[in-house]
Every structure is written in structure tokens, then in C-alpha cells.
Length: 564
Ligand SMILES: *[C@@H]1O[C@H](CO)[C@@H](O)[C@H](O)[C@H]1NC(C)=O
Ligand SMILES: *[C@@H]1O[C@H](CO)[C@@H](O)[C@H](O)[C@H]1NC(C)=O
Ligand SMILES: *[C@@H]1O[C@H](CO)[C@@H](O)[C@H](O)[C@H]1NC(C)=O
Image (cartoon, rainbow, N blue to C red; front, side, top):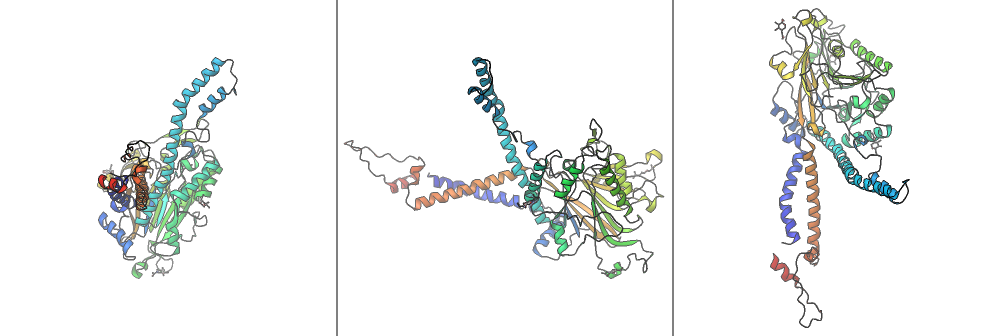
């Protein structure tokens, strides 16, 4: 078989394989049936069909007006994970040469030679493995940027979120120097989250009594388009450090590159039905109503320094002031129609065994939180009882049932979906916050049970390749009958990085093979004997009888015909 034929046969198999794999990879959310949950139904098929409809027909969708693509812990790594970064690759080779060329002090030739032999051994046992591992890591990091980009780009295209958030640990280390920080933020914005934009500072507002909405939901305008591009970045421990590491410099560089670390966004949902609209509270015309104009309050809370001791007390005071102002500017719990989405990094406290990470705290020798898996129980109550106004006391305002909402966070790369609740009928010490997994809470019909205030907390599984490239899809919609916001959450996982690499390498091989095949065919068409170049056996010219070395020309046409 000639090389061209061989290639043609290989391509017959490889092209369909490459096309099928590429299709699957680039359309993976479609093959996996990923979609934002639809309002008022848990029918996944209907949700998928509705997403498809949005791509085909523009305005017949029943999709929720707020659809948040939530991504956990991308953790872009860099120099700190490359072994030979910023040093030479073969230090022992350099030393061996120095010893050999008398550039070093040695008492005797014997010792000099001994050093050389040592260095040569180290080249094989240290330098070469180190260099290979560093090259592997560099390739891995490079591919990882695009693997993450693939998740963001593909899901943003297919699922059509109205908002996007990255729930902290955008970067892999808080210890990196300025130069590396800039390099990673360049990779974040120009590679992994290309097309995304930082939330502008003037939009990311501090909680206040008087505010302008950040946008209107369910209305297609320029502002809605801007929100589809923006990424609500949460500050994580690997971005700015835990309380014991958090300094003004670390916070400033994060905010400069990724947006503010603490702010609120209020989105309003216009009510188009005049009868429903007329039931809304109004100081003059409708003072007895407890219905507020529907509003979604998104709180980006930096919870890195809620626990003590903190390295910078004034930064911690600011965080506490922020949380207090969030509480003071919230509407009274008795009113209906507002919904709070808390985006933060560290999960709330929960006992061992509920999620993969159990409670864990570590402190620097000189004081200062060095590491933590959860917030402390006290700081967690600040969320449950403060921001959400939930209370174990049935005589508390609003019977302790609090505000509607959900907490989204990251940090525990494994992900977890839980329900925090407190049983108001329990007595004394028995009456305390408890946490169970969401499916169990739903099975027990805990959410909404009278006398049992509660809140769902979703820890979004990491989008890192080793955790399967997950993404969360949170839909929030408004039910005009009950005057309540409702929400549901789904996930979509690309899978580990191997398939991503496989498809791109396969595509590359196929492209190169096609080019080579084209060149071979062109060469044959131009009259070259292609077989001769590739070393395939061509009958040697028989020596002439008189041995004078005159060679007979080879019959190209015949040779080809015989081999085919
Ligand atoms: C992204 O790349 C552009 C063009 O090279 C550059 O101007 C911009 O600063 C980059 N963004 C970041 C965050 O580094
Ligand atoms: C709803 O009522 C408010 C007054 O409470 C009014 O300003 C607004 O225009 C009404 N919206 C619609 C769609 O009727
Ligand atoms: C709440 O506590 C009461 C009294 O201890 C108990 O009867 C009830 O089953 C509890 N409810 C839940 C949902 O745990």
C-alpha cells in the first residue's frame, strides 16, 4: 500500500471519529440535556425544550427572569506550581561543566572528578525528571485555561444566563507576587473568561435606604445585555487570603482586577398585570398591603474576615459594618416580594458529616486565621438571623420566618446542597440551628413547614477539571399568586479534562494528516514518484550485463499498477 492509500484509509476512520467527538465536546450541554430549571415545574425535558426554543424562536420562552450561571473555584494556577519556574532547568549540568573547566575550588583532581560524577548522576535523577514534570505542568496549565474557557463559553451560549458569578478562588494562591497576579488576571479575562467583564464600581453599590435598581428583570434592553457580559466575582481565600492574611494591598489588587469584594445589586421585576400591580403597597393609596414591588437583592459578601483574629482590624470592621448596613437597609421581615441571593465564598457552619468538608480552623502562630473550612457558628448565625432575619423564637418579628432567599458559595470543591433550619417548638438548648442535605429536607417536607424557619445553602462544586468541570444553573422566578420568589437549581458537568485534550489532539492529527495527504496527492498529480521518497521498496535497477553502471529507468507506471 502506498503512503497515500494508507493515509486515505486511516482518514476514513479518523475523520468521522473526530467530527463526532468534536460535535459532542462543543455541544456538550445539549447532549447532556443541561438547562436552567423552568418556573413552577421540575420537568427537565420541558426546561431543555424551552432552551432550544429560545435558540430557534426568540420570544416564546417561559424561562425564569433571573438565570444565574454559578461557577465555583476555577483556581488558576501558575508559577508556584511549576517546579523549575524562574531557575535554570539543568543546574547539575552547569555544575558538572564548571568543575570540569576548573571554575570551582577543589583540593584535588580526585575530588573534582568525584563531584562531576555526582552531578552527572543528579542530572539523570533530578534535572531530567524535574524538567519533564515542569514541561508537563506548563502544558497542563495552558490547556486548563482553555478547558475552563470552554465551560464558560459553551454554557453561556447554550443556557442563556442573564447573570454570571464566579464564587471565589478565581486564582490558585494568595501568596503570589504582583507580576504573577497580573499574569493570572490577564489569563482570567483574556482566556478563561474571555468576553466577560468586571462589574463596574459605580454599579456595585454599598447598601443604602435610597437606591437605583441595577436593572429590570424580564426586559430586554442594553442594560440586560451588559449584565449578560458581566461577571460577579466573589473574593476567596486564594484571592485575598483568610482573615490572618488579608491586607489592604491584597484586597486592592483583587478589586482592581476583578471588581469590588462587597456590594449589593437590586434588580426589579416590573408587574405587567394591572390588577396584581394594584395590590402593591403604597404609602398613600394602598397602605395596608404587605406586598412590595418584586425585587431581587443580590449581596456579594466578602466573608474572608468575618472570623477572628484578623490581621487588619480596620478591614474586619469594614466587613462588619457592611453586613450591619445590609441588615439595616433590608425591608422589614413582615413584607413580601423581596428575595435575597447571597454570593459568598466560605460555606456556613455545619457539623461533621453533612458535607465533605467538616468544620476546621487553623491559626497562624502569631494569631490570625490561617485556614478555615466553614464560618464559625456565630458568623453563620449572622447570615441566618441577621441578613435573613430567621429566628427560633416564634414571637420574633414576622414569627421568625425571616426573608426568602438562598446562599450560594464555593470553597468545598466537592459541592454540597443543604438546608439550615431551626425548630421553634423545641425547648431550651434543644432549640438550635440544624443542617441536613437538601434532598433529605425536601423528603421531610421541611421547607415551608410552619414553625420551622429555614434557608437553603448551595455550595457549588468546583469547575476545576479534577472535580469534573461543574457549573450551577440557578433560576429565580416570581409567583404573583403567592407574591413570593421561588428558585430551583441544576448542575451541568463537562467531565474531566482528558476528553477535552483527546478531542483537540485528535483534531490536530486529522488536520495534519489531511494536509499531508493533500501534499502527497498533489505530488503524484505533478508526476513525482512519491513512493521513492518514503523508502518503500522500488525494484532496484538490474545491473547491466557489461557492468558499466548505466542504469535502466524504472517504470513508474508499472510499479504503481502492480502494488495497487
Ligand atoms: C486583555 O488583553 C488586552 C489586550 O492584550 C489587554 O489590553 C488587557 O489589559 C488584558 N486584560 C487583562 C485583565 O489583563
Ligand atoms: C404599577 O403601579 C405603580 C404605582 O404603584 C405605577 O407607577 C406603575 O406604572 C404600575 N405599573 C403597571 C405596569 O401598571
Ligand atoms: C420540632 O420539635 C417538636 C418538639 O420537639 C417535634 O415534635 C417535631 O417533630 C419537630 N419538628 C421537626 C420538623 O423536626
